[in-house]
Image (tube, rainbow, N blue to C red; front, side, top):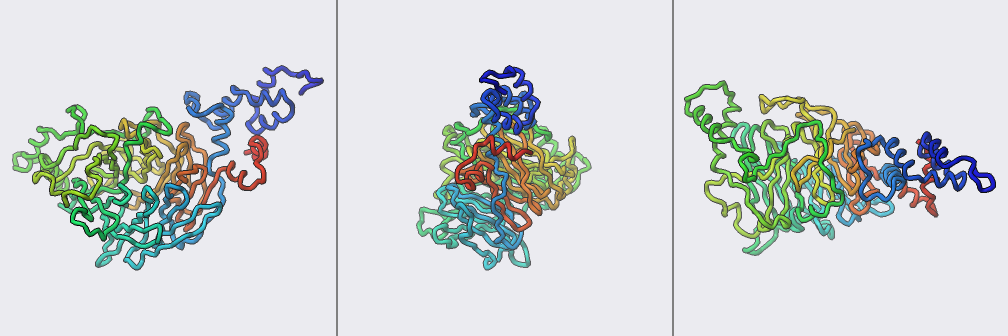
Length: 559
């Protein structure tokens, strides 16, 4: 306190007292007098408050874009979308997926009620259109994505075929007229599909070769199937990839390499996560880096097939070894490109040990491959090249249940349920048990390295054979994910700390940030609702005629 303008206590003593207070009490004390207000904004004081309140490791530096510790404390407290502002109940069954348009003006939702709903994102969210896919023999809708100019919507679902067999199908919907423009088969259905360009999309097909061996074909499809030109193909084969041990390609997405050199948040390589994730460069010129079965293995395999060796091999193991031998000399190596900035990366889940997705495959898409013009059905490839080789493979040693790209496309975030340390897959039809804890891993697609440590907080409970996809999303500063524990979660990307838990009544399947406003987040749940969450700052601005100062609001909201 001050008497006659002279402080009764020196600043150093007031500072020591304030160090023992919580952030709300510090802000409240700063209203007492000029001296206390000055001390309450001290940078060293707020650095201590920051590390203590958010429990950030002391060796983690301040965010590179932060201007002060006080402002950084306020950013994490005041701009995280953790206040529920609206609940949408128009769906009648589990809501499985959400996607925003690039403008942020609209979003789409998919559900077990077999509809794709398109919503207006205004001051209050309202339903714009609902497309019922049951007339097309769909069982339910599961995924959607807006093209780059927000003129078309890709919707993916499960299609009921003859004799109740299930496959997948992709529909393209015009956002001007809401007309259904085209439908494309998609197998298996959890390939989902994605846009490659504004007018072309990627789908999948699966061909069985043996009991546990198959090949996945990825197709480039024209969104408009009524093209009547001999120079424009409706569909063109992109890649044909061998699958071993009952694995298949699933969950395709595309990353734009041209955006790598201007990341919105540069993450440094740090301590790896709990799982022993390994990145294999399969297109390297170095024999030490490339993963190659080698002549010794091939020779041993030929001895087995010719009867000169009699190891105790199961039928599955023998089929896998025969498939590996077939692929040798019949796989097209990755193409080299000097204009990497114009390329894109095709990213998908895959595997080589068991049917559960435990690896991430990465294949470069060159500019000349981004059009349906040219040879159809892959006539341009050599007659001996049955399969296409991958450029990179990331092994996460666990069951992958979600993937998402950062806005700059440079970082890949992966939800994974780890296998026990040291576990070995002996039978491809019996993968190792998976952990209830979900690890959120981060990979730099420019350097192909794992960065940061695994983010944790969320959990899942279903076993391997019932495991389902939990969608995550990444904004400039935050990453969010659903979970089976009835909550959505938000972490800070720089500090790797969990900032908020968002409550639902059942499993949270999907989360999505507005691409134009990261202080708005949507969550979708098995409770058949969609919830909209905004930051305390945004709620305050929208509700109050005149915004209240942060420090007074914070002091009234003591935790």
